[in-house]
Length: 383
Image 1 (cartoon, rainbow, N blue to C red):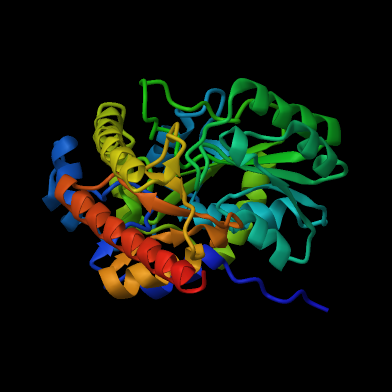
Image 2: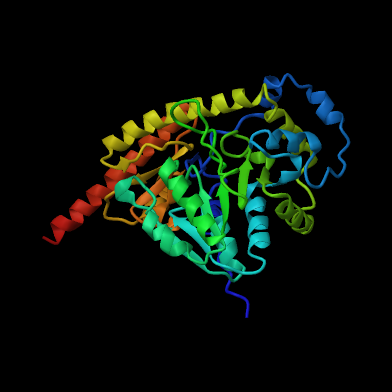
């Protein structure tokens, strides 16, 4: 008997609400670039793109694009790369390939639960390891060791969605050691590498930390190009071949035009400029967010990387009810922490234009004040 289908809670919420809302603070990437801005950075001719024939593209990704992706991963070559329709397809294909013969998946919580959701929908066990909020969302190494026994896959999102935390060296070593001990695969969703809030060093990939690693990337988050729906998988050649066969069923190929634009974005002279733009938005936005959150009496661990923050609150209302109020009364959308399995929190993006961010924070503060006032009035009435 097939398992009951498990909807993807976060994406179901987004697909119902994100289009048409005036103040969208639910996104997890930086404010999107305009295509003309990318072409300008690359000094590229839009006419040449428009003159290209709208034909089927190379199914596994163009040679030039796979070479540029491989260059980001030491020791990888084009044969280690499959270009996909976003990181979402890459995660789905990785689950299909690595769990084809069954096995348990270890997933940290809170997390972006697409890979674990795929594993559950394929009928496989998912073991959750709860991160420690009191320790800034640090990994519990003992809990990881227990969960990893006999597991097939250890799934990590690093830097994390929703917390923005990057694993420290000891945590990375704990994951690598647990995988090596159990003969498990590491599936590393690394779409936030490049969104670091301080310094210029990018979060290192898990690629190269053993023979059983699949690294997944995308142009959606650090690059501000989510509309391209362009992602990739970097893996041993046998995994790439098996995923390629499934890719032919799922999508045949990523869009030709998206791959042409991705080639520009990942060009050696263009990529640093794209990343620099993202980091400016991230750093300016978080400073404004942190000040506002403090004034509202809420709390946030400064993210190491990412365009969003996971904000903790103490209000007489749950995160889903708070999200519903903000949407109805303030035309503002954020992600309830309950959808990540972490009540008492919400995910709020801040890598946005200054005026838009300021107005969104003002509206958030208005609703937080209203919720507190209503709670005080109720407690006074029942005293």
